[in-house]
Image (cartoon, each protein chain N blue to C red):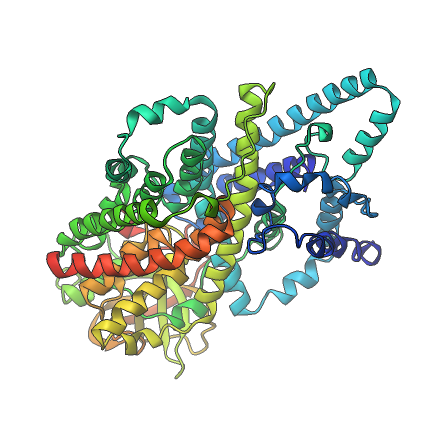
Amino acid sequence: MAITTEPAAPTTETPPIAETPQQPPAPAKPEAPAPSKEPKEPKEPKEPKEPKEGWQLNSPLVLTMVLLVVVLVQSPIRQALSAPVMQSWMTVFVAVVVQALPFLVLGVLLSAAIAVFVPPTFFARALPDNPVLAVPVAGMAGAILPGCECASVPVAGALVRRGVTPAAAIAFLLSAPAINPIVLTATAVAFPRNPEMVLARFVGSLLVACVMGWLWQRVGRTDWLRLPAHEPHEGETKGAAFWGSVRHDVMQAGGFLVLGAMSAATLKAVAPASWLRTAADNPVVAILALSILAVLLSICSEADAFVAASLTQFSLTAKLAFLVVGPMIDLKLFAMQAGTFGRGFALRFAPTTFVLAIAGAVVTGAVLL
Amino acid sequence: MNRQAQAAVLFLVGAAMLHAGFTNLYLRYVKAGLQPLLLLSGAVLIVAALATAWYEWRRAKVTKAHAEAHGEAHTEAKSEAHAEGDGHEGDAHEGHVHREPRIAWLLVLPLFALILVAPPALGSYSAVRTGTALMKPYGLSKLPDSNPLTIGLVDYASRAVYDHGRSLGTRQLKVTGFIALDKSGAPFLVRMALNCCAADAQPVKIALTGKIPPVLQPDTWLEVTGTYSAKQTKDPINNGPIPYFQVALAKPVPTPKDPYDESWNQ
């Protein structure tokens, strides 16, 4: 069984490779796996042709085979994974996924509800017409979405699809995970002797979110955004559209979440913690080091304050940078943003956010801490 | 991955979440307070799987009826398109074929990890690589009068370091944790403290002195009985304070239900 099915699994990986050469006429840059292909609707007369090249395997069959093979060879797999470093990798990997999945599901339900049940006119009325004003309003609205950053990505995607100006949706995307009451309470608990940290985090995060929104307003281009415009189809009931959106978003954002969890687990399990001690001595290096650490660790924004508090040898401003950068951009978020908004967007958005978040944290830190 | 396969994956992921939430498995990875959310999301995923399967079945029926009305040639093209696995809208003639996210195959990985391997809670490997994360508590509660007194490892460490053991005195204490050995082989009793999930878990360490068992395996759980010791050392990784504990008796115990210390969440 194991021998006959083993070759079957890799064949599913082949179609993407086989098909890339056929796509040169498509816009050159974005080759993000799933979402970027969807907007190429003008090309689609080609697509029905593609699958006819002998791929008779369908995915339920492949899935069944993969499951069977893994169950059959599970004891060698377990043995291979018994080394402490692999165990620790697996634990962190599973932990990140298990922790983030409920929030992802919450965000996906909310985003499906926005996409299906809330009429676009609602947002037109709720947000000021002037986009310069809509940005801070949307940024403040982030305070009402309880939970961590995994929930905000699909919700921001749904907002854009629902006609909200991307600048406002970006402000919401960036502020929601950092300034909601749960996260601010956790920050207050983690820094009992520095209550100004809570205020600094709130102000710094909101500031960066608004600046990013305004920046998008000035230089952003909508063709960088590649939203999977999958619903609603005509003739589809609201229930079908709702569950279709939930299914699609869980599968897609979930896949990217797994990707992010894998990289975060790799760093946590492999990178030595001792290099941090040397970084703490120089104030500039300290801020940079903690910002990079926030990106690499990909900790949930509800818990990052505790990790920041434990980095005792660092300055408060460096810790603030950790708290401002982490909820806005990290490996897991980058993967999920690439999935929701397209790779072209994520590649421009992530570095800009990173730099602006550090700058925002330094400015806020200089004034408040 | 077509929609039937997606429904299957959604169902399996939902079932795995429910399984982890109903057993104590989830406590190896996340804080106890997340249990209701885990169960809820597992249930939502299962409902989404069933809804997907149901709408898929209904659409197949509608498409079939539609195709029959359109005649033979069309049916063939359509059933073939369906067999490809992309089988998406079934309305290729409307020019609206789009692919399902291929990245979704990755969701199979945590499924295997959770169901087949179920990795253990973080242990000595992480503990010796990370500095002790002891924080100054903002108030110490009054200890109960029992003797010997069972006290959490983190509680002991913060009373020993920040209260200089005043509330501990010479009382008999019982502390539970797992063993980690540093490079020189010196034994520490460790508890990983957790705020949200294992990715943010950090060790709190106490050093052992007195009647330590001669052979100690890393990751074995021990319940040590003894008294407060005023001796302290520094964790070489982050210069964090590590208090000592004067051991009178050590006995191996099974891994506790919640292997992490969650006292910071209260």
